[in-house]
Length: 69
Image 1 (cartoon, rainbow, N blue to C red):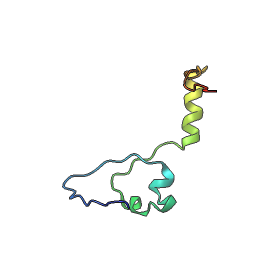
Image 2 (tube, rainbow, N blue to C red):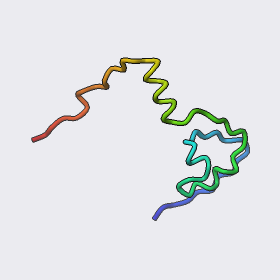
Image 3 (cartoon, rainbow, N blue to C red):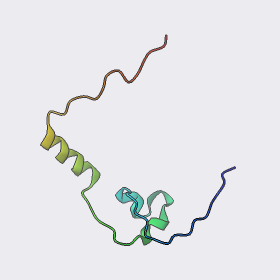
Image 4 (cartoon, rainbow, N blue to C red):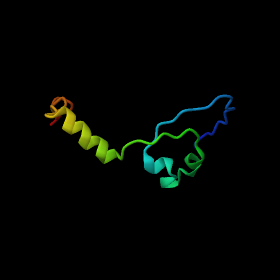
């Protein structure tokens, strides 16, 4: 059973969320009421821009998975 603990909020709390979640998607409706929301690029547009500015992008570490058998 999950235990819930209430907290007293005495100062603003910042949160970084994707646009869908911030707009109430996946039942995160409490995020709709957020204040001082900042907009940004669409996720895919930001990714395309990153690859365009940093190409070629090297692959990540190739030793992250170890086969055991």
